Length: 433
Image 1 (cartoon, helix red, strand yellow):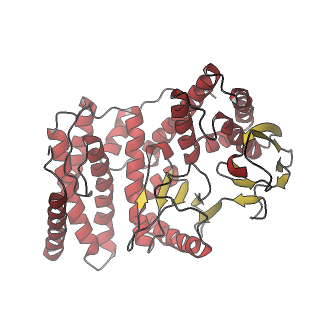
Image 2 (cartoon, rainbow, N blue to C red; image 1 turned 90 degrees about the vertical axis):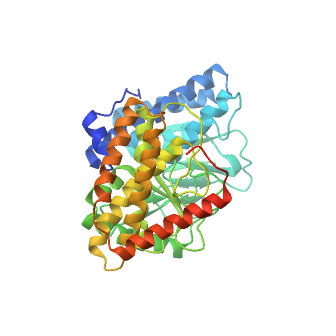
Image 3 (cartoon, rainbow, N blue to C red; image 1 turned 180 degrees about the vertical axis):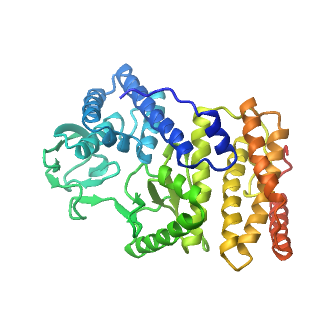
């Protein structure tokens, strides 16, 4: 159960800085995020013990179960520890304990994590788990709904049996069975060829911040639209965007429903939830494919920044061509890296579509991302590694600026960029850059 030190090999970091990386480079990032979750878990255990948290003993027992499951089947433990909502719960719990607060559901949720690992490893066990609001969340599996008399106070005894059955609070279930009273499994979307399967997490209380998350389950009609969108997007990525497809398969494990706009779709990712893409229902496969291109870049850079320091601490806010508000340099580098990936997606996609929109998107975002790399390089706040990283980004974008685009698409792209700058200027005070 020990974490290990991580470094990103120079050649992999250079490939990532240029905008790609592929599966081999991305695996270094996935391994680093796994270790981050393990470090958070160890810190949570130490803080619980030091603070004499009432659930410290339950968490210690769960940790021992995880260690036993890892000896039997390491992949079972790796899968649940790397689950995005588990990372968010660990971070929030550590922060609560550092403030001297008990947290909710607190350290004992490690019992539910251990139970999932035990189910997958075929390991009979007993664990104590929290049941806030009368429910037990088994991360990456589903939610056990206890009887109406359950008040969520204290801990509930949960058992994993040799045949994979789970019992808790009078509920008996198999995690692979469909939804029924007492059991709400997480659903999946899978491509027709079976080469990509993603969880749809609309249950875990740590799946996404409450401000934008959709409460309740994703309706069946929308879930079907997600399945159709994924099928179309994945075919597009596999045929024309191999690197994005590779990186998506390595990084993305969960889709989380969030509120959508009147038109198009919203999407987001967070460092604390590495592996999750939050999104509203995609209008079509092309939107979803470009969303993967965008959000995978965010995930990559977030993981890089957990291992490598690219920016020195500093103040000041700057114009960002993709945001309505001023952004610090940390936000600028995230946006520039994301739109480096978006530009690359549209650069390739325009060869396979007859309309001007891919050309417009390519022209718009290559120029915007290129301009922001200049702001970053002129800031004086990049580390030596950051200078090399952003220089490599800019080198890719500079080469793309020389590629021909139809005049009509260039004009449309510049009009969109100028309109954004004008609207931004009307709503914001002058900024640093």
